[in-house]
View (cartoon, rainbow, N blue to C red):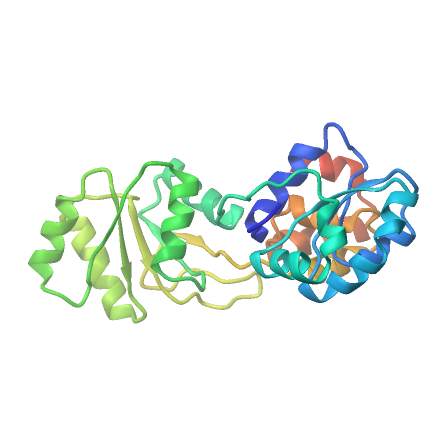
Length: 275
């Protein structure tokens, strides 16, 4: 899979699980030396792995391994350039569609279902990232940007004319956040609004700023796969990459899974819930 982003990894694993219930996700290509012969697994290599993969390509044939390569653009280009023989062995090429963080899209859907006043976007991405998450959550819905620093009457009028589109505004300070809330209330608009605002740190993660009470917090942060795998492997997970992928690499979800496994919860049952 080329042009692959981390937001699509869980979806890939879910598609493979019915036929390959033992599948795992790895970041180190040297796992090809230790997995059982005939194994099928997902490999998320780095560009720097190209030389090793090219030299060791007979290993994959000798051990009858079937590998799904999950590569970003840079890694695919490195394999094509520096692992020519290995690259020629690839039998199926799929360009991976763009995808937002799964938990960000789910957060937008949850806000709509619960009729929250709006979505507080606490993620690090800008408007393009918000648009991608909205498109993933609610295909076909438009996004209209409003300027909270512009004229108040114009802002209310723009919100009233937005129709089914979601309005989005960046508001770093509490004064602007309250201004948007007032304009939304005056325009009689609920939920279909996203305010990009810095989150407030708490012991249980980022929370909405005080000026946006009751809004649904959405964060698009994802752990690097290697870090998520390590956190789960350290507590004894047998297939840490699979669990990390199914959790969407969401930091809070990975942390919760690690706690559950550490206290003896069944990994197979957790996999079934996530899948």
